[in-house]
Length: 91
Image 1 (cartoon, helix red, strand yellow):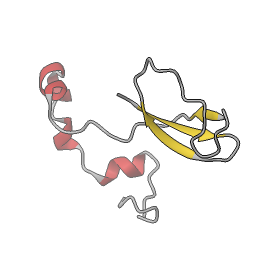
Image 2 (image 1 turned 180 degrees about the horizontal axis):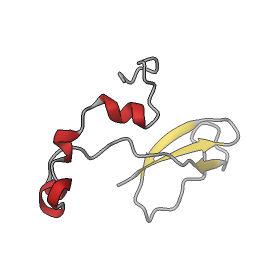
Image 3 (image 1 turned 90 degrees about the horizontal axis):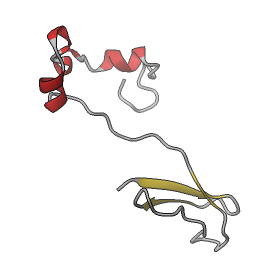
C-alpha cells in the first residue's frame, strides 16, 4: 500500500497515511479538526539498483551488468548533486 502525504491548509500540520489506492483522500485534520487536508505530491524514496530479475533476464547485449559499471559518485555529480558533500549526501 502506498504512503500518502497530507498537509492542512489551515494549521500547516503535516502527516503521512498508509492507504489503499482506492481509499478516499483524508479530509479532516487530526490536529485542528477542520476539513482542510490536501494531498501532497512527493517522490518515491528508493532506487532499484544492482543485479536482479530485470538486470539478468530482460536486458541484452552490452546493456547488461549496469550495477558493475555504476561508479557511485559520478552519477550524483552528473545529475546535479552537491559535488562537494555540503548537503550531507556524501557526494
